[in-house]
Image (cartoon, rainbow, N blue to C red):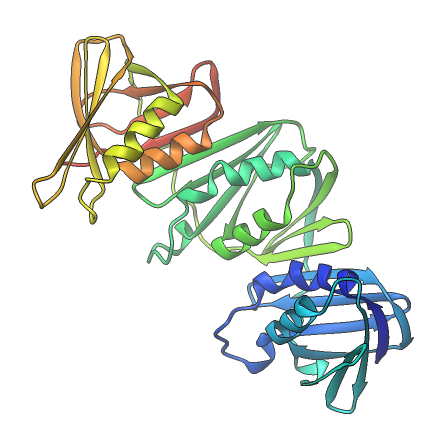
Length: 366
């Protein structure tokens, strides 16, 4: 294998793929990129056996071939070379030699045959979706995914495809985030897919706010996204996502309407004196205002008071301040509505007149 290209051209696929390469590996070859030069295309592949990313670019290839090379070392070397530098790469037996002007680097390699191949995706159906719309679905919900929960099916994001709607849903058992896209994507039957946390984070990283369409291939055990010359593939979590509809509180006839920015900043200030372990704040709503109260074991206290619009007399309820702030950050509006049934029920946080993005936060006993 032998090819040459510009620093910036090579850095693009390397930077796109490096995110999936774990620092700690069970197999030495998983710390490597698979680099393949065929025709006039150079492709770079990274995998952790669960998520795979392939990015390709044009290159001046004088000898075709493939090999695997230490991923982070190669990225660091190319990144540190001067802008506009021309890079030549030559595979000499089991060594990869990279030269640029007066610089020369020799890297160890492992055979391409040792690199794990992703199972062929058995595509059940393919849908096209606007890139910005898909990114929004992820950004508005992915923060509520569990992290290393024993209920493994919570360590991911639910994609629910219905007749004319795509929903993403995430929950860690303490809060729930739902975002909907009302659009007929042409799915032939309703489907539920759980994409693992690592796959969701990588997918979110590679998407932009572009109006371009991307292709999603839905398989029995995999999901694949094709965006230009980049292909993302992730295994699915084999499990049943809980009935999230049962978590959305009913009879929430007590409404508190608040300015989103004012509420966010007041919560951030009060959080400074909250208990570091439980991160609890108490909301006391009465009349036409709401108080945010935080305490900690050092007997320190924060009290913030805001104007609010209430349709009831009063209520006092505790929440984890981080969960409230995450939900507020995900909502796009000047005013938000907290909907409650009583002081012991979950809180539904929405934007007035828009149900496409909803958040449920469980109460906290303080």
